[in-house]
Amino acid sequence: MEKYEELLLALRKIIRATDLYSKQLNKDAGLTAPQLLILREISAQTGITASAVAQNITLSPATVSNIIDRLEHRELIHRTRSTTDKRRVVLSLTTRGADLLARSPRPLQHHFIENFCALEAWEQSLLLSSMQRVARMMDAEQLDAAAVLEVGSYENH
Image (cartoon, rainbow, N blue to C red; front, top):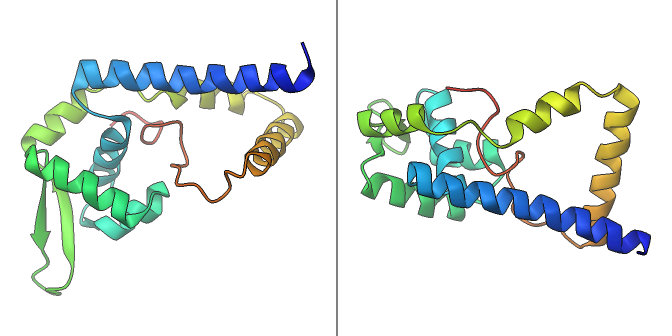
């Protein structure tokens, strides 16, 4: 097998692992990975706005806005207009949203982060630069992507 074939196989395995996790998440919690990511972000910061959520998780404001609409429709979050600045709308979890978040599984990347942090600094840098180069080679630098593997921060809320 050629080296590029081995690399593409490894990438497909990574994609498959995140896909399987996303399907299991949807089955177990009734949420997509981006929905869980946004719920975690709203839970982490009191009075956060949709634009701040988008910036923090590095997804486009339009994508986040659509997901927030769906979460609000499901009564998992609610929007509240600020009393001090009527232009500002803050997001918060409903009781139902907080309960669902508390029951949701640990993020996929938790195990990855533990293993990555156990590596020597030089090996972390090598992996990072290699993956960044692969992303450039695949013309993927400008794609919307959260800074984590599919779901929220690695801390349990």
